[in-house]
Image (cartoon, rainbow, N blue to C red; front, top):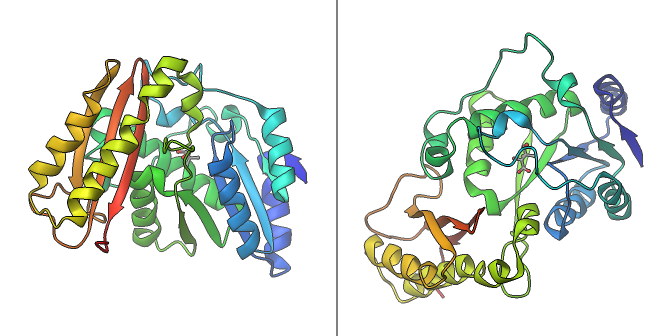
Amino acid sequence: MRVFDSTADMKRWAWEHRLEGKSIGLVPTMGYLHEGHISLVRRARAENDLVVVSLFVNPTQFGPGEDLERYPRDPEGDERKCAEAGANVLYMPTAAQLYPPGFQTYVEVDKVSRPLCGASRPGHFRGVATIVLKLFSIVQPSAAYFGRKDHQQLQVITTMVRDLDLNIRIVPCETIREKDGLAMSSRNAYLASHERRQAVCLYQALLEARRLFNDGERSAERYLRAMRERVEQEPDARIDYVSLVDPETLEDLQEVQDRAVAALAVKIGSTRLIDNMLLEGRT
Ligand code: PAF
């Protein structure tokens, strides 16, 4: 596996291989890789000639007072995991390269960036869309792989690709969970053991929503109440939002018909966690 910290080297490698007609699968990450990331690398491996993993803790998607400085980092461990999973390139640029003095161009994906995490993290999706578009132009992938745990991020990127006519296939990949159901996330590393036990409430709240959906419940208010009640059982849990939204537009639903996304963001102590579940195909 090649490791590039220079954007010029990354671009040269990408152009040489695209000219040879090779397909490149890109897995964008902020590092501290877990099994969820590795599942994306394996999927990219299976569907492309070559796989690039990018590792960049992107400052423009963190707001003031968020965890940019203390975001967990383990570049050596990440390098080993990428090599084992079969990546061809690990691209680890510096912030100075990607945001040099004078940088002033940002991507705004308007409506889908506003609700849910967009409401509590203003500017977050502008930072995400900007860095993802930059990674797309540097790496020239034919496909890019993102986890469904960040459903809103996936919608923002899918909308950007559609609106800007980018010739890239966005591949949504299933959320990978711990044994008790907690969605894997680099931020789980912040949780103290008593918080880790409580963090399962996000998944259990989503299972409540799934149960109501399977029972044919239509009233969104009932779903929201059941989810909130489950989260509020935990002493260190503080709800940021609990929502039931249209999977594509992310607009709030009053009535649940055939498809919905139940989504929530909860602070466990000082750690903000998110999770969601697509409700479709009643069982
Ligand atoms: O999901 C993430 O890890 C980040 O938001 C991404 C897509 C790598 C952009 O920085």
